[in-house]
Length: 294
Image (cartoon, rainbow, N blue to C red):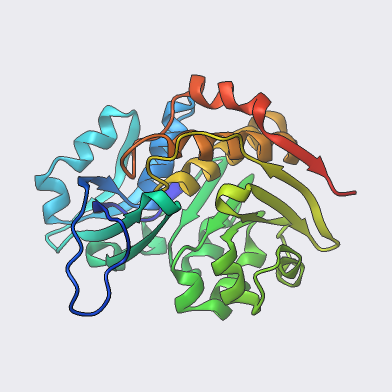
């Protein structure tokens, strides 16, 4: 089960981020379904697992058929609340040649997501870009609970750090880690561990990812080289693969390897929710370099 956002994503590929009063021409654009929980749900469904999405869909998302798109991917949308409110929108400025992007977000209908919408049951729950207050309630009686706070790490770092102790794994990138701890070094994540939290997974983009627990860095993984088309959604593919391999294998290193492969496979696809197929992930897994640190 994924808890989070349904967005309309407008992605523009630009040579650089424009400055004040500057007009930069985009090379191309992509408009479609986005939202970290939506992307995650599609990735899980493509990996052959049942995917349930808990979210709120606004007027434009319904009119554009985003719920139909989710259903066509095999995502259960029975717990999506359709509301007569503006939809969530994200504008992505993708600097493809340098492998990064900047985003501007309108929360819209996503703002009304609440714990009362959570259905009972479910072995695995993943919370994506949701307020920390939702996390503790969502993780009760779940076999595996994970949290990727996204922008919440910047808006409410103390709340995210507290909520992390209610989950099994916390997913962060280096900028989010710095927002929570004051440092971007992966080792800084040790200060976040405690409570239920087994480990922090720090995603380092083209540098791969590391697992950090209370004693330091446990393992690292480096991705294979692939043609990078669009990095948007790569973290969601990573999260989905990590959780599915943990469910299937119960092995952190195996899960890390699969997650890095899935993230790399996603970067070769244009569009936020254009998740990789299992065959693409499996083809890259043997090419991921994993090193145990202790």
